Image (tube, rainbow, N blue to C red):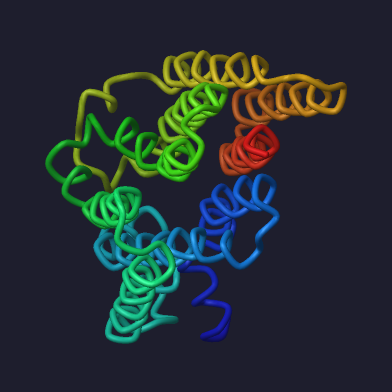
Length: 262
């Protein structure tokens, strides 16, 4: 695979850039100031990257069971190299908050987001039943930051709730293939089809909340496309047994949701 490609795989560019764009695009749309918007968004990029890196370091033994082809369990990257990469990203995240966001009440949310994100392993190990909700709550962080910049835009609260439901439903599905290596919790007693039902209700709630923000024909088209992706994800999963493809389609739904932050 090569080291550069393995590094890209371990930092999860789609998810990291989703967090970055969730702050960059709304700020840029409202201020037309690229420098300001980049400064406020960069901490989310570095923070997301270091979160995924430390999770792979923490989960290397589990990944030998659940994801043996990932860079660390496959031996493509050495733990020492990945640890150095983690500290570089963490340092970049903290410095970008200090010098890009400054010392103000909003900067607390950035620091809190980093602390909560890199503490993920303790929830997985000791409070696994709360893992989907924990991930969903952390994922709303970028939208909550935007809410703090523009507190009078009440529609942003609905978007934040929609993101929570989208991520909660997706995380429930995402945990299914990881069950063999994860700590046992109440969720393991639920059949996959029951998980699918709960996840489907969450995805539908997310779309419904997003639809409240529709003001144009283009916005309506985005909602219809989101509905299509949600339906397709469950067709791929429940009819064709392709859960990984289904998860990718669910992530596409979340990317489309960026429109309602602009």
